[in-house]
Amino acid sequence: MSESVICGIPYKDFLIRVEEFHGYRSPGILLGGIMVENALRELGPTPYLNVVTETVVCLPDAVQLLTPCTIGNGFLQILDWGKFALTAYDRMTLNGVRVWLNYERMADYPLINSWFDRSTENRQKPVFEEIAKEILSATSNLINHRSVRLYRALKISQRKPTGLCPKCGESYPLDHGPTCTSCQGEAYYE
Image (cartoon, rainbow, N blue to C red; front, side, top):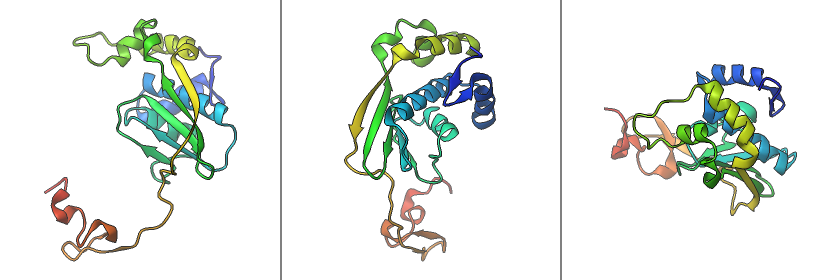
């Protein structure tokens, strides 16, 4: 396993980065890293890279770890669709590559399948090194990709006017209404 390379990063160094960024060695980030590598290879060089993930779990961290696309700069968009899939695309041409797991083949890989199938009660969690070995050997069979064209860029490129909420005095996007979202009753705190 130590001779593997993910997005140009030697495997051992990749694991260190994963631990520093994600907090622990994660099968999802390892699989996500290989998916990112696949997408970037198929897409080719682009100075206008954006990525969208279709899950909130692990995959966005792999994108942020391996590309300049982050939540903060807006070049990473996250859809909570529950699919372990991503699309890397050029935000100027809207041409991209979608990468996803082939769930039909996952049954051939019992450790990956056990880790991925979260519906099983009281299952024994595989040791990271064991599942990592299976992931590294299985990815060419588990990862699908195809070229896509987006309908539109998902990053909002125009700045929205902001103002101060007349109720709480905090800044908010004016297109949210006469008061901020929180003062409209959508607060997540009291």
